[in-house]
Image (cartoon, rainbow, N blue to C red; front, side, top):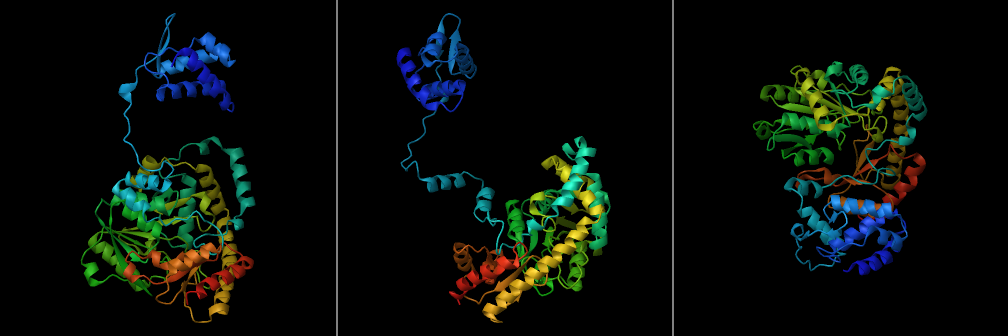
Length: 496
């Protein structure tokens, strides 16, 4: 393209891009002309003086663009000799022709999936998360409207005035010292967890806690026991780490390994003994002792997932499995996502003392933790008694909502449908008759604006799966529960 023709092309297109600065418009257009072949190798660019006059911009702007293009290898320039396009053909490879419609986004998405590793493809093919994080009847979600914002803000403002700079840096290994001590003291009093502050390692939640435990304690191919059914998030995390999962059935007393399963010891066991997810049973004392004795005998590790044990209705929270452990085989994972709000992203691991320094260092090395302002506020919040006060208040609130939901179930279905695990936590399960596809019920309910989850999707072995619906009640008021369940009941009735 001759210089005068290029000038006309630049002038014509320059005016259509008047939303960005002149420098960016000119730079983008010349790059485009070179890459699209409008200007071949050796073509001369207009002089800076002429181009500036034609485009009506400052000559310095054109000079800056030409300098940038020269530095990036698009052009070569010499004083008094003009500016010419470099030969970049050796850097370009013609892509093979693609016979598909360029707007075929589904096909493009499939290509992107195939570009992933085997582990990546396996992970994205079994996603369990949802972008819907509120409303009836999303399970596992507290009511963030109950968050003690005024108290939290008052403490935060006090800390901003007192020591802001120290709290704006990366956290030290293990996390902010005062919050580790406050959590250790709190867990000792309410969950019978035995620990020092050094054994508390701060994380962004239970997922990250289990992730770092797997990295430090397991190798790809190692065997891990999980409960059947189990929380999909932990299951997918373990699978994506290349571990071999063995699903161990649960009964009314909790995890129940067979003699054959006992004969093949795992490297790691992941359990939720205080409130099994999603079925809700409590692991019996006999099973707890069996599990701890077995871990000691075969030298495997146990991760105790204690995600919402604070919410028991009619009885006190149960003592932890970790508090019974005499051989140092239990890692206790918890968070404040259910007791306060998920958006804080504050969790913790309590690890056996010999592992404490390694875990603290690994979290610092892998994740470069910060978030110290929230940790500092939380430390004060716990020490001043506000956490215990808040939990007592929302426990009463959630208990009322639980009763409301159970009353709605009974009013529509009487005793025809079983309610499972409704005496603790933030959700209950409404069992569906055998042969009813709970995935279809969930799909149809969502089309009517009601969110729930299918129980069958929590099973690793689908042949064992039961049909049912997880109904979260904590995040919705009674006024919201009643009409939402009326809608859900109409959907369920179409399948009965």
